[in-house]
Amino acid sequence: MRVLERCDALGAISEEPGRLVRRFATPAMREAHALAAGWMREAGLDTREDAVGNLIGTRGEPVVSFGSHLDTVVDAGRYDGPLGVIAGIEVADRLRDVPLEVISFADEEGVRFGTSFLGSSAMAGTFDVAQLRWTDADGVRLADLVGDPANAARDDVRAYVELHIEQGPVLERAGAAVGVVTTITGQTNAELTFTGEAGHAGTVPMDARRDALAAAAAFVLAAEARGGDGLVATVGQLAVAPGARNVIPGAATLSLDVRHVDDATRRAAAEDLHAEARRIVAARGVELAWELRGETEAVPTDPDLRRRLEAAVGGDVMRLASGAGHDGVAMSAIAPVAMLFVRCERGISHNPAEAVDAADVAVALGVLERFVRQLA
Image (tube, rainbow, N blue to C red; front, side, top):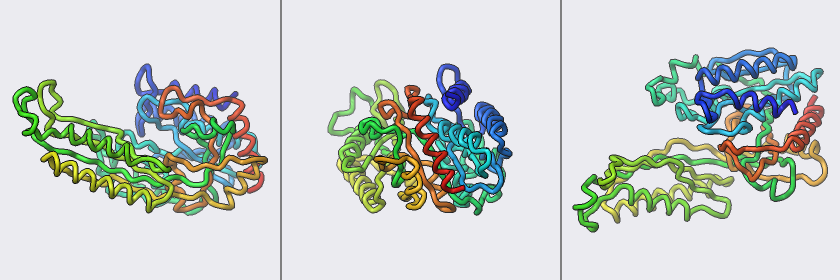
């Protein structure tokens, strides 16, 4: 199948040998965009890049915009993002009489600068220009790699639709090839730093220690315990200093990710965890710095577009929420959005083991074709 062959070709483009890593504004990312731009032109689309590096293939005055991303996490799979871009190109090739566009958004993952949804937020006119001062691990400023984000803003997107692997096991458990997304979950992201006092691991009595790692570990377990009933709370990164083998850690910094489809529930959970962090540091004699790093509201998909997608699926339609954020979150500020999930093996994503079945992708392409015909 051509779509999967093209995902394989993109999967061979990486910054590092032996694993897939494709960050924003790197030579690997530029190579991937050049390859995708060629496929867009073959499908009859005119291509351009905007001020922040979004790759856009357009034909006429589009009735619908397909979008996703080609940047990846570190040690990624081949389908999270690329499948949506390549599927859009495939639909454009099959429906050459229909005016539409395909967008590969810049920096959806935010790995290099922490600027998740950079491209889509710039297109939606919601990009925080303060982020232009942010630097990567090598001290490169984002401002040195992009133009004025305001020049990427648009107000002419009529409908935004994204195909994506589910990134979860719901469709597989239900025996469904595809599912229609009802809501994209809201997120709260915070960075916590626990600061204690470094000391000798062998000489400081247990009751005199101010161990930052122990405090951080208690918080990790508290976050895990807070999850359930649709709420997820995850610590994804943990850095410890000084980190020597025989030294009590003096500082520990971690990332917190809280998600739920109901924004009030999510905010309450984040506030509870902030309070729990304060209780932990008070009990352990360490200090806490809590920094809110980002917050996105839950985004219900557009009811009309959702009905059209369901009609294109036909029969019994699997409806589900998206636990992951997508460029549709930003694009919802300027256009109605819809999402179609395709089943992925064991629900694995952000992992080299990502896998999809060609038959499922064929079903998804058929759904998208029928959907576009309704809009044309």
